[in-house]
Length: 475
Image 1: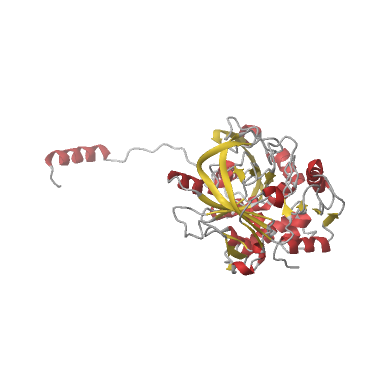
Image 2: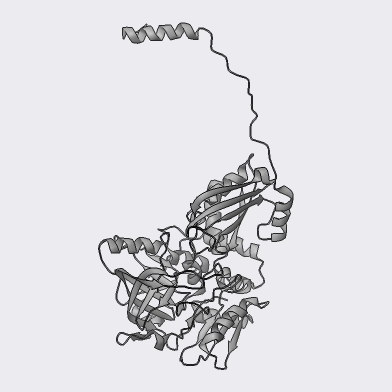
């Protein structure tokens, strides 16, 4: 079954018995976070549509991506498709990039059905709740956030669509966390160098493929919209924002438009993050919301983050694995598959054929030099090509029968790391760990250690050359 947006995908999930509806009124806290925590623990891990939240008028949907069944349906595969098969299907679709979007007129865009220009109040539109008990406030954890490079504002390819945590600071103000290695940080830096506002669109309730791509580490000049079109096999429908030249999904449920205030910072956090722990509080940029557009009876989609596995772990599993696979495969064609599903690639398992001795270690070091691997990956395990990296029983077999700790395990100290990983010290720095669990193979050539002798008449020719230098002539 094909779908065009979140609403139609929920119909697909319901028809496949992958959606539960809660019709009784629930409390925003602690009920919504408890539902978000509980749903992934179920055998089928369905999405949950909560129709009535006390104190609010709009519904909430949780756990849309929170199972391999839902993930398969997002890719238009049978819901029982094995994870490894989903990986290779995703790889097949990935190679169809780019499929360019189509732009539709604002008057035809569902997200423009309601336009709010005055009296902005996020609490009237969004059924907000704390995701974890000690969060500093209400967070938007599953938004597609659009910005452009102010130094090249007409560049479609440099337009970024990413997912960043958003803390609600007031009726029309929110904070955002743009880490230095995120594309949005480049845009913000360029704007702040000129002391200019950076236009931004926060899009909520999106086509699940768009949410998938917004959390995918692709190249700076690659378009998330073009990739989403490739995964769907049809163009994504876009329209223009009201107050800027940003391209936004025409079928989002809600879009918050505004700008990042240049050189303004306020305390943001703590927040329960994807490693399963609270982050600290730090100074972060502030966004002023100037306009809201939304569909009639908009659905608010949010994402629960907690001790893995939760929805975010399914959402960021294969979309982290595939880019790493593509980058490794380009340089090391022997690589078979990459499993970077664990905590957004902080742990990664690679299966590869070894071309010569030490090959597994070289593959690991290449992974650690990729944009995502450099900043996120802390532990790399390399296994043989016949070991399924998605089957932890096989991986453990390789670890227990192929690893000699004295020669197959090594550390790289003082390397870049993910600052949200509570084990990084200082935050953003790590010691990387590589475990080569491949079967040892011989070097690709032999070695002869017999010393070389001095060629006959070398001394005679040394004297001739010295004399030529002195005479400045030829002989």
